Amino acid sequence: MDQPLDILPALPGQRLARGVARALAGHGFVTVPEMVLATGLRVDLMALGPKGELWVIECKSGRADYLSDRKWQGYLDYCDRFFWAVDADFPVDLLPGETGLILADAYDAEILRMAPETPLAGARRKAVTQSFARCAARSLQVLRDPMAGLL
Image (cartoon, rainbow, N blue to C red; front, side):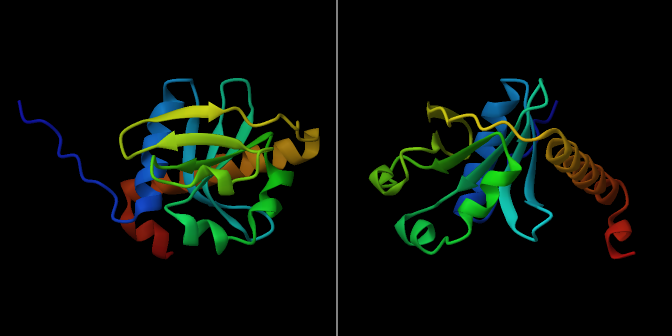
């Protein structure tokens, strides 16, 4: 039987997101890449845990990528935990110590520092979870019918 072809995403941040998604799946999380929040900000990876917890993971491919990111603090009001995902060559001393840290590559990831938990209020949790569900369903719909994304 033929093995499925493993096609790596083109961009470094997308490769990190793939590895993080794979690792989080092993902990019962499901993920949506490039989810747009109510504010219009787009997170690299949103994760929904088995107990309804919501995590935001920002993938940074290097020093310049991190230093040019001025919007990450806008994500904090939309998750229970916030993480940076970086590769082994990233200068982690740049990252704020009060955030989570994930070491990743295109195939796997490991949480090096658990992010502090700041539970969302019930109404916000419901809104973000519904947005997550709609984004995931839209992705499935486009896979099933590529023209659906153009309607």
